[in-house]
Length: 396
Image (cartoon, rainbow, N blue to C red):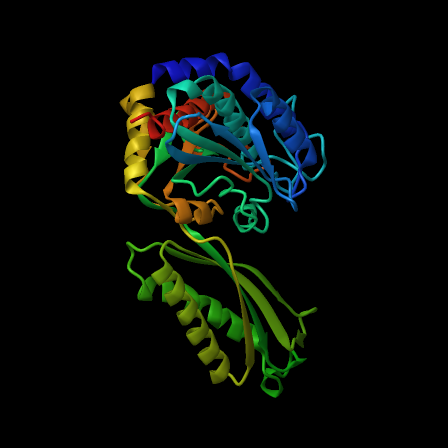
């Protein structure tokens, strides 16, 4: 395993160069022509078979070892976020309103370097690696599009999948994962509550939806604490509420939106039922009309226990016992890799990249305009991809 880390460190200048090139020129959504071109250029000398999405910039590079064996998916996402960068880095984003603040530039560079290293080791492996480069992870879910288009099954079904995500609030170089749920499901709800407007001085002559909306929001918070065990992660956060124009006019309508995070399908279904029951009955009690619209997002990312055990073994063999940590609870953010690992099994893990001169707990988090990365940790990420593939595809 130490050999893989040495190879990754030797390849580090290429990893950093590609990461910075992508970071300077962030692209959004499913049209990532410049990012894709940079990755394809780096992979071109390997002669891998390229399977491209007909509708997005997503693609899969297939590496076949020539010996029969299992098939492993290694995945990286490539898109950026619509926000301005405030890091002051020499290679900060040159595109206003766009920034790689979720680390997809790092994911893409690490997987590209891992492909180069694994190609050199292919005679030691049996089976196939599919290097998956995904567009639009931050948007409508590029993983599902790739699956619907059959990109991941080109050449037959895979046996497992693995993905690595940087974490700027985790000690640099540490790999973190857990069996079972590691990321939550994410659904959004939009509530449109309609009463009757009127003059602010005579609320009894109107049917004011604002206090009823407030009552609903508080009832949903209480519902989480009273209907779910404290050991079952459920989060409801109202992030948007809109009503009215000026202080002395009671509006006809209030619209508010909430994000809902759960870690099991049972909790997901129960939350949906309770949200509708509580809010509908409150609206009826106040003689108001209510429309609820649910937008279902990614499901929970559920790691396979045996794959996590393997990941822990290869990381500790490579970096020592302190190089891997088991997260005690899931992250309540969502990840569209969930649909991939649901179908094929495998695992999702975090790579600590907290700046060396910062306390990880107070470092700028993901999606912050000031997020910084310790690039030295990227070599461990590359080596982790290589080690996982080498162990999973070891000849029998």
